[in-house]
Image (cartoon, each protein chain N blue to C red):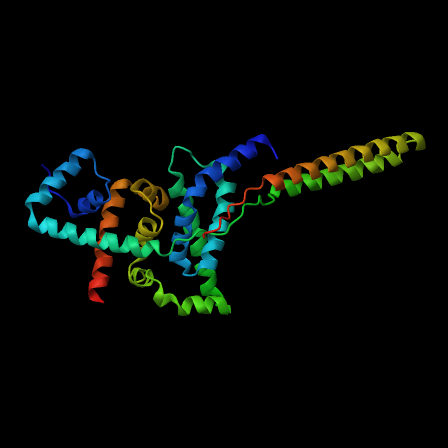
Length: 135
Length: 163
């Protein structure tokens, strides 16, 4: 059997040793008084520190909201520029065609805008809220 | 909102929900007040969600996310050092009542350790991290986790014995 390293006492305490090695440590602790003393000191400290650390735990009041990402700003700028170019090109057409196409474009923009509003409203309803009352 | 985004969001919520209290305690061990700890968990939620697509799901999520929390806390501490701020009244009360908090002796003892020993103990005791989580959060092998954790425990026990 390999000699027991002190670091393995920590791993044994934490249940992180393999089953075979844990058994070897258990046997060593039963026969080696110095090793047992070191282990008991470690175990006592571990319990005290776990108890003290637990006093800091609390349930945080947090929410999740998706932050706007850089790509969305770029997309919005490209769309706005495209609309401006389209509008200018309509002005170059004969009046009835230009007015007709502008009306179609305006309808599409309104429909798209309404769709985004409805999606955002649905997203807002589905936004998960991680706040839980502690008591 | 796309279907894929909903799936990722639901998955993230499922992973994060059981870890919130430990996350808050872990953040508290760095920033030493509840309000800032809550802010750090919130910030880590946003950062974690944004980074989730790049996260390798074969790796321990807790270790990965607690590393995010740790980095948020360290950034805040650096900001505090660069720009000392005035303390709101409610924080002053919290500071004054620290001696009644049973974690304060532990936190003060941890301040005597080197950063590498301190952070592994913070992850272990405040974060409740397993050895796999520790290895992931600190970017070290499992064998190093074992030896470093033991060294940290010995150092902390010595600090207590000196006091």
